[in-house]
Structures are given as structure tokens and as C-alpha cells.
Image (cartoon, rainbow, N blue to C red; front, side, top):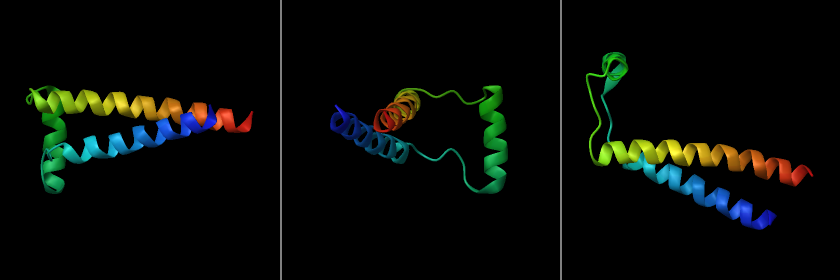
Length: 78
């Protein structure tokens, strides 16, 4: 069971890396980061199609990675 969880954790981590790399950059430079964050916060930019799917997949993989990390660390100590 421990080996299965570790393999699943590696799969989630590789998937998370791949999904983050597939996303396109929102803006460039420091000024773009500040204005891009404000636009995203106030809803001026809405993600559509593939961008929305990649965002949701990133959140799902990140949550899964976090939970699996906690489970694996608890399992190894027990």
C-alpha cells in the first residue's frame, strides 16, 4: 500500500508540473504582474475553454498532491 501511494504521489507531481507548464503566461514583467493580478481579481479577464480547464485541473492536482503528501507522511510514520 505504501509503494502504491508513493507511485500515485509521483504521478500527481508529474501531472501538476506538466499542467503548470502547459498554461500560457498571463503577463510579463513586474508591471504586468501587478496589473494582471488586479484584472484577475476584479474579473476583467475571464478564462475560457482550454485555459479554464487547465486552471481547474491545476487546482485539482494541487489539492490531490497536498492530500497525498499528508497521507504518505502519516503512513510512513505509523
